[in-house]
Amino acid sequence: MEIKTKAYGAIDINDKQIIQFPNGLFGFESLREFALLDAEQQPFFWLQSIEVEQIAFILINPMIFRSDYNPSIAEGELDVIDLKDYDDENSLLFSIVTIPADQSRMTANLQGPVIINKETKIGRQFISTSSEWKVRHNIIEELASERNNSC
Image 1 (tube, one colour):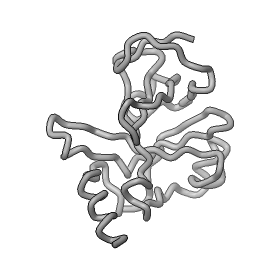
Image 2 (cartoon, helix red, strand yellow):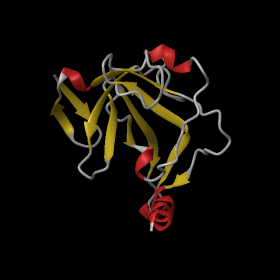
Image 3 (cartoon, helix red, strand yellow):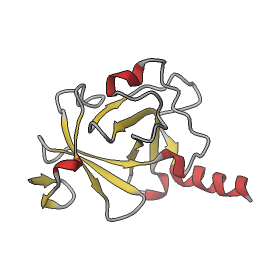
């Protein structure tokens, strides 16, 4: 299937890359179909709207820079995407990344994790019940802190 993307123009994707978001994402509730794409720069991914070419989100696995991350999803919430836990073997856990002009200030939203069921290809953005996780966590600073703590 060919889709038009914000980052790469027109590309061919595999049906396995298509993720359904029955509730959309926060602020984009009307958009329900996305493609999960590898970004040119690892460890990032693109979540590209199939419906609107100019809508795409950069994602990262938050465990890369916060190994202690537990999204604290209310009990039963994951049932809507047929998962029992966020670290289930069939789940993918992401945070939406914001990259300003000064890339050293890029942040990840740990308060609103995106979780995808790999088997059913259904995803949802959740709200963490923990006050520890904020909308803007500086990735570079937290990665440096993570490295210092492991030495």
